[in-house]
Amino acid sequence: MSILDQRDCWVSVDPQSMRSLLESFPEHVQIAAENGRNLTLQKSKDVHVILVTGLGGSAIGGDLMRSIAEGRLKIPVIVNRNYDLPAFVTEATLVFACSYSGNTEETLSAYRQSRQRKAAIVCITSGGQLESMANADGYPVVHLPDGLPPRAALGYALIALLSAMQKMHILPGMEESIEETITLLGELRNRYRTDNLEPGNPAKKLAGALHRKIVAVYGSTGIMEAAAYRWRSQIAENAKNLAFHHVLPEMNHNELVGWQHPEEVLRKIGVVFLRDKGDHPQTQRRFDLVKGIIGDKAGTIHEVWSEGESLMARILSVVYLGDFVSLYLSYLNNVDPTPVEVIDYLKRNLRT
Image 1 (cartoon, rainbow, N blue to C red):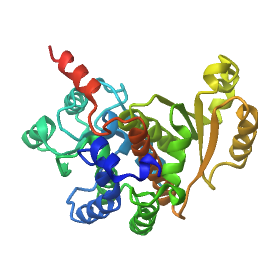
Image 2: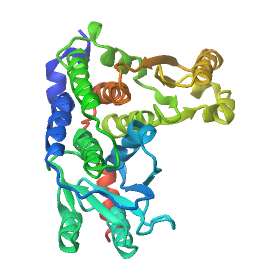
Image 3: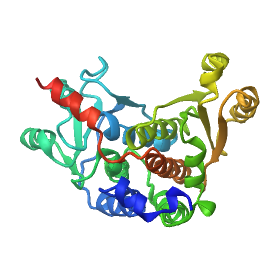
């Protein structure tokens, strides 16, 4: 029996039960959607650009929101991962300050600058200094449930962003997409969950193929760009396993050439292509050609196709598989998926 099918392994390697958090993802989305219907936010006025400022698990919601909503929006969306704001931020900018803990120092810095520039601000957080400052300054707060690793709060954070934009009359209704997504995620959970044995579990089989390899994730610009970044980040944080990502067609204009040396290292790379029926036809052709070019150089190559009809469902179907793959890689690497000790170390030393 595979180690991934042994309950003793799940309990010993994953004592804080990251597996339970992943399996609760459909409920997170559903609860967040219900909460979103009860939000009271004023209609935005004279907003020329939306800026989401955050880091790590608090920023990926902004990336995914942009992938899901950008085709419906008439103003640009920028995701800022820095202490400082771009120079274009003014009173005509809507800033979503996103920090799950509420204490992310880069986000607090960006919040203060947003306030100084008189931007419209909405804070999305579970508490901390960000909530305290927003309450004192009179800015609205969309409150997230606390007690989760930030990366496991994605369902809440993403839907909070989408709901806030709907309430502010920036984004058309997403109700049908959200309902389809919740249903699909429930079906995928049954397919990927820990008690579904490896022979019938695509997430476990893919994790097994990627084990002991650096993982390269390639998606398409726009549709699968944020999903590819999420795969990379989850494999790094949960499995403590190095991964990188790039997007097509840009990857074809630079990184592809690097798939020649060092040959012995290339054979230790596991490649995952994230594909979607909505990708540009030429991008579809590029994926097929790249697969042929690097096929005999990489250690293994796998294609993941999105499922569902709406763009939201398709993107999150791929994200959800990647989350489970990262969990099973942590089991195979015999590392607890929940702690991120090196990040904690870095934060402590930045404060001294």
